[in-house]
Length: 467
Image (cartoon, rainbow, N blue to C red):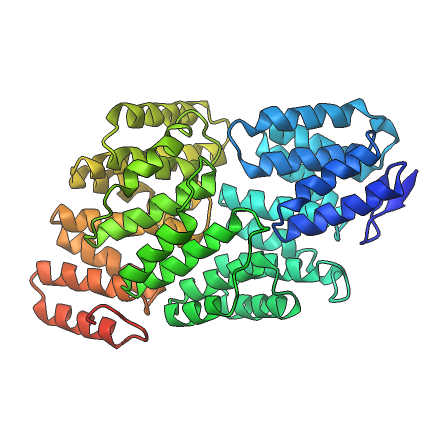
């Protein structure tokens, strides 16, 4: 039988109950609710031959980036292919083909199939999200925006999950530099639905990228943060709030958020590793003693040495291993990344692996206090903010910071001043960058410029630099 979902798209199933659970699963997934998996499993229970439900569950598992995700997802793929797949709609059949490509690590092929699905079905929310998020982790910044933008006028405020589309579009527009338009989209999404955590996340990115940390903290304070029913995006939102405080030099508050919220229960999940390592790295960059916090992360990092799915995670694993002095495992990680580079079969994969390798080697050098070598490794790949690694401008920013500090520590003060000056062009309200720029200027012998830079930092709203 053929039913339709809440947006009028055809679903091939024998059970109206399965359709209800399917709709609930897609809506829950759009808001990062843990119950999404439960709903899609109930849809399968209601109709074990529901091809698309098996496919969606497989995509959930792949998207979670758990250790060896393709193993569990392959079982879902095989279950979908074992149904009467010849009787389902073209959209559902194509979705199964995309899942196969994804499981087989042919992400570019999966994206091409999803793009074609969207061309024929512009209100397919789940496929739209898959495109948006996979392009994000592949560093395809224009596709992050345009995967939503090319279908945006087919959506309207009266359609289910319209706010989620606004939130995705906000994020993509912001990553491409139109912060004013992005903020307009994000605030509209949140006005419609305060439970849209991707929209909350997107607005946090806008406020970070325009270096309005004071507004960012006020923005985050409006939410009660009772997000116990959500997945790991909640910890990532705490990371964003801590980042606002760090950039205001309110290190005590940032460290408190680290300990009490997003780093309280560390797992090998990729966001746990990224959030925690990047924040500790920032703390140490300003001379804060983080105690034994690096050692607490090591168990999770070790499980990621041979389970590499997102290059951006690799560099954080390298930070943890380097800071814990685990040279053998760090070398093993780097050799694995080097092997990935040798196997790259297209330009995108090669760029990602080349950037991943350069950053991991730079981190290895940095942790060994060979700062000149760290600079040597980062300089050729730092253009466009290390974009081939994927993730966001705000997340990759730690690498530009690392290049500037490595230049300072290697006494290449001219380079350091240039790096921090460039950062200030992009984020003129970033108090910490003003402080680093002042330090570089002073070391270069330009004391008047150092005084001016420190005064500028102290004058910015909410600054704790000299409190």
